[in-house]
Image (cartoon, rainbow, N blue to C red; front, side, top):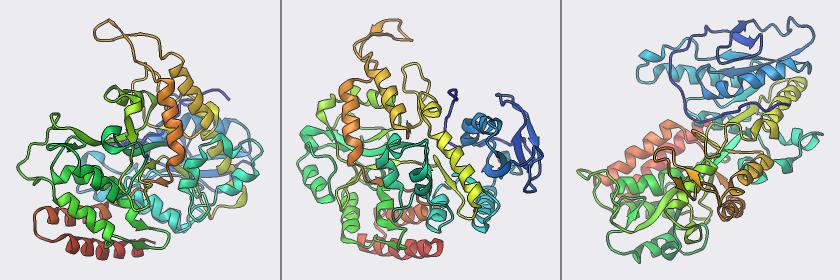
Length: 469
């Protein structure tokens, strides 16, 4: 298979759609100016006995831009399957969206068709509220992909990052495939946070008390920014979707609220970073090799520890798969599930993932994630650190500079860190986040105590989670 650009990223491009609502399949090799042929889905394809696989898309979503050539290649392969694309956002007037009402309808229509079954076969997470995909996962809407991996004669599980797959599993079942991943963690200078990777809240609090006066967390000292840095990215750890339970009234959560409330009042404070104080921890989100390397320009690689978000089990670093997920409908026929798996296997193959959309090379304009294919990750990394001693030309000054490439030491630090991560950062639905924000800011404004806030969040979010699951 030839290498095809695959760029599955998490940013929604909200521009007006030009395609009318229909099921569409590319009729000739797709280009940036591709023309799509509209066709109805009747269960049979005009080309003969090919089995039709329906996949929902949003034409202006980057999943579509990143995979449309692959869909065409899959359809041209004469493998007995044809993918038909159904656009769920073609009737939205993007320029006149009011209070997200149109997107609510879009998300609802997509979710209902997935739950009804027999309408969609290959299901990427193209929700504008990605947490809805996870709720559907918990409801059993998607097939267990482990059965396909275990019986596959082409793809070995060891070719993929098993740590990421295991973190995604629910009761031992892999109900969607992460096409890529990034890493969310907190990091700090080892002289302040020690050398132990990951910590619990008590360990963090003890080390914070020994920091010099005026020290900062992620560059700030106000309660709102400390909340964003320490807790917001860790919210999913207090929700057990499997058992429809929440733990916001736990002693751990209340202690974190009290800690947040001890920082400066967020009102009337400038929002610029404070570069004068000693930095305790900073957000350290890894989504590309070049970007990862650049984070060490501030700290030497041997003077930084990935401590993660403070958590009760001491495992507070996360794989973030955002909406880079693709599932197979649990209600599709076995023949269609097999065809859907063949397409997903194509997406995670070495040829599709190596240096395509996950570049990390110095000349790349942007990076969005790390590839789930392990060999692709290893070879991309080697392409970087094999040049670590070379100088490059600064595009602005024209001068030679060193340190432009990922180093072998940095690569090894990342490779050693990945197996310590046990969780994914589950996308919490926006209505849950709104409740948590509302209640926590009532703590900051001194309207409620930490126990009252924790109790309110527990009651309100628990009700929502039970409704959803």
